[in-house]
Length: 279
Length: 279
Image 1 (cartoon, helix red, strand yellow):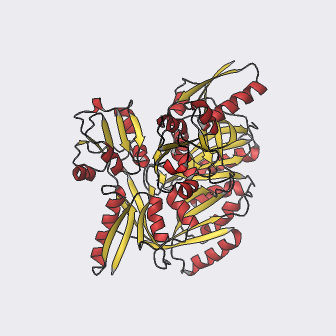
Image 2 (tube, rainbow over the protein chains, first blue to last red):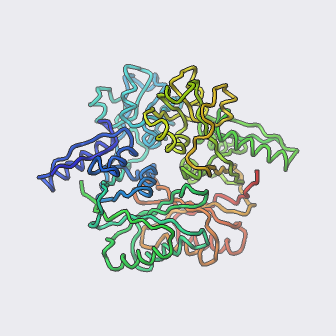
Image 3 (cartoon, each protein chain N blue to C red):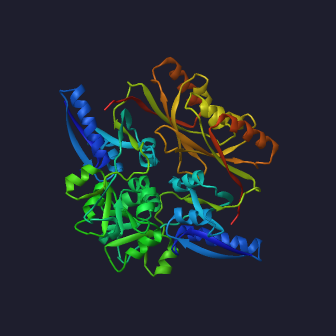
């Protein structure tokens, strides 16, 4: 079987690392499947390629342990019919890449906003005066360096090899436990898996409306592994709540909980069942 | 009385519009007070100027109706001893500023990531091929234009006047109801107000741990106007929950609720009571 996989490119991004880890998992578990990697210039375009049937699957970051949810993915899931199939988590390594021999000469640091945020404390301590310039991906920052000795980019140590830019510092992230969850999504219904992703909006913001919805799970001892709110984009103070829970939508307890939930929510969307892959 | 007020500058940003609206409110209600506006290059630096006592107050965006929470503000509140005193909401207008006489010549669009996100659908429809370049503020994007006819910036119509750049399109935001909530913060305890802001982390992620905390408010019919989760930055899957509620921490019902809440949370931080200003 042939499978095309969209992700945020170009080569050297953390999304590419996740895509390669997923391809490796596929090779080990479904040796008859071959994967074609398809880099896209943005996460939104990678998701759209799946929604419009151009590409089979996409692998997109959903949440980082330091910077939190990747909101473009949540918003796109709410607005489209994409389904979540699998999840994997990869550790994130941020290095400082530069042609400069020392930190003293650096005046500008390029990187993706998530990477800049994940290294914020290190930057404040060691490069407090530099100008931080956000880029579309960590790789784009590396490409902007050219031969400029007054600039640096935050990117993976692998990007240092790929683009032949010296690694001035090898690990500058703020937290030792920096990792990112990725979801593998497609336009097909996702029936199987040990976890379930869903979201709902509430008809009114009465006291306890959200609690009423959450109690449906609590009474049944269903564990919510994540809850996140996003604006409905209609009016300030109206939210969509995103929930990840442990269980499958065909488990009788969860089927009942979802039926009850649909009666007290305005819109309820089930994003699908997914398994957590051990890569 | 003299009062210094920090905000995200330079002149022409939406934060400046909010700062001017606040200064105007102060002039009307406390005529003996004079406000000095102090622009800062980032929201984080504006908040830090208040935390270290350099500036009396800061006005910072907390939430936009389209793009959601401004996470740097939530994270800084959790990590520092800053208190929330007042809130105001202002409508947001995004124009397309350019020296180009038509859309056809535009190859690059500069703006703050929040503004790019708030105009995403308009950009996809009318300028699908352009390169979007994030900047530190909407104003910085305008300054980068120089005389380049192939570039445009998304900024307020006011920035068009201030920086003498023609307004090619006057309102390109995706949603009619685009507005941003701002908080006025200081390092002093905030005792008075009709609303209360707080956050807590939970000792364990047991089923229903969050529900148990939220039920404390639901049972007392205390209305939660906002709930938001952020990572603790310790470990993936551990969250801090931010809550805004209607009431004052000295109301007996709320005093009791907070006492009960402190016994079932790991860390509970009260950010203070605040009033919503009608500007």
